[in-house]
Length: 464
Image 1: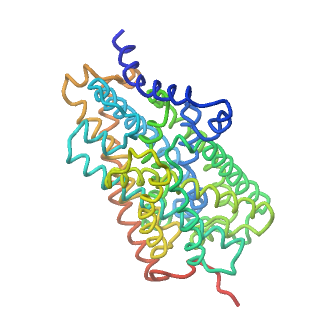
Image 2 (image 1 turned 45 degrees about the horizontal axis):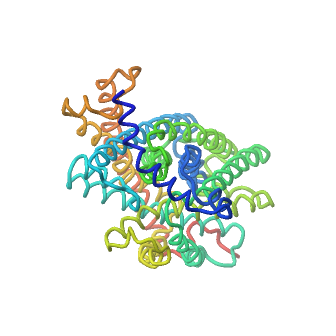
């Protein structure tokens, strides 16, 4: 009986808000709602799956060349499960925070709850500041990576311009995401984005198998510890795309239904990443060590050009996914977050895009930058901090007794949950941040020494 009451509290205000908005709209706007205003379980699943695998799909074969086939497959499965676990923890903490606030009659009608606010409400300002720093820095570099990927991909269709010039162009294009108010409004984009990555993944798989193995192909990985941990942290980054989990949950009509969505999204993503990375590595082997973008090795064709164009569109969508929480933080900082004027909010958001643009031009290292961001930022943002936050939030016996969501019995109750959390923290701290940080920074510095900062065309073939 108590749990039913809690569930009503969790979703009550939000459902009422959406119904009020819906009733005020005329029939002629129903088509607009269909494509523009989403908040169902399916919308959340498309958002999670679409956001989780974007440009990283093109760098996973590169990671396989560093790890070897077996380690590459095992790390994908392992980090896929671990990422789903910490997304589950974030969803529990969100529901806990929102329930407590709505019991205090706090109204979230014109306010998007974010991860740092959850930490603030449950654990205090120090946790808020730590969460805000890591989340914003990760999302900033996540947006940078999408811009770098745009320039890297379009070059394989049109090499008349260098990659730096393409970065300028796509920076301007991606700046238009300031006009998309919130994650509600990504309904059609999330669906299309997932279709695009699905096409690209299966193109990579089929094209590599049809191409066959190159002459004298070698599969020597793993043969260097630096490369091994660099590859592992790229996969850590791949399945750590849930820095926007709270914003996606908040866009749902019933946020408490999010619990299993990320796991189901991850299972689908694995059907794309495992076959494509395995097939490309099988065909090209060690050649991938110097070609971090898998598309660069496949012969040009209409199918490849289609994959490039679809990935470009998807990277625009993923840029919006990564940048929207940054827009919210900036809006709250300058005091325009609850303004209803879309145009006013869009103007206020523009300064957020400028540092992203600048960083993409300084560090155009497609591939190595993923591992660096994975080890230094993703490790804390989406693995260590949620696990520690969950353990500390529910450390008092009163908090466990009054928890909105209790641990499922098959996990072994609270003891089982704490055991998994401790394992995640220790593993990611040692392997992800420790070894991964060491390896990815060495690799990143090597790219700077080889190509230099502000390089015009990273890993471009020399023209005659």
